[in-house]
Image 1: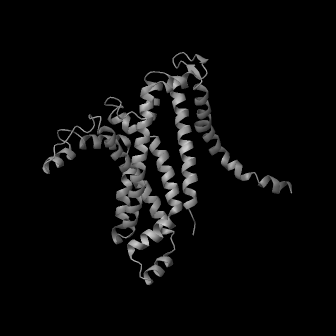
Image 2: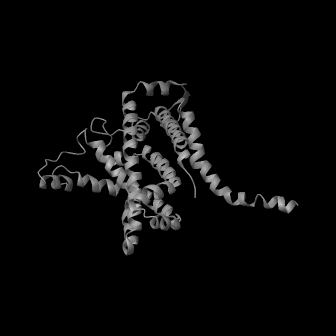
Length: 292
C-alpha cells in the first residue's frame, strides 16, 4: 500500500526540474514585476521605495502610452485575421498540391524559423525608397513609390505586412495537422451527393476545423500583442511615434529611461488586456467549437 502511494508521486519527480525552471524564469519575474509596478526602483544603486499607484496614474496621463495602446490594438485587429485566414487557405491548397506538398510546407514555414533580425533587414531593403524592390515594381506600373518606413501613414502598415508574413506559416502547419485528422468518409459522402469542392470547404472543412480555429486565433492574438523586435530593429517606434507599440514602450521606459516602475505598470496593464481579451474570445468562440 505504501509503495503504491509513493508511486503516485513518481511523475512529479520527473516534472520537478521543468516546474522549477518555469517558476524561476516565469512565475517569479511576473510577481516581481507586479511588485515593482508599485515602486520606484533605481537600477543603478538598487534603491526601491513604495509609491503606490503613482506609476499607474502617470501612465494614464501619458499620451505616448495611450497612442502605443491604440496602435497595438490596431496592429492586432489587422494582422490576426490575415494571419489566420491565409494560414487556412494555404493549408488547404498545400494539401492539394500533390508531389510538391512537402516543398510548399517547407517554403511557407521558412518565415517562422528565420531570425527577426534577418527578416527585418530584408524587408528594410525591400521598402527602401530609392532601390527597394517594392518601389521599383510600382514604378514599372506607373505608380510613384513612397518612403514606406519614414512616412507616419505607412510605417505601421509596413510592419504589419512583416508580422503577417512571419506568423501565418506557423498557422499553416497547425491547419495542416487539423486537416489530416478530418474524417474523409464525410467528403466521400458529400461528393456522392453532388457537393462541389467549394461547398465542401464551407460546409465541412471550416466547421470541422473549429477547434483549430479557436487555438490558432487565440495564440495568434497573444503573439501579435507582443510585437517588439520588428519595431525596435526597423523603426525604433518612429517616425513620430507612429509605430510605437506597448512592448516597445515598456522596453524604452525600462532600458532607455530607467523608469522601471512605469515599465512594470505598463507590462501589468498589457497582461490584463491580453487576459481579458482572451477570456472574451474564448467565451464568444467556444460555443461554435465542436469535436468529431
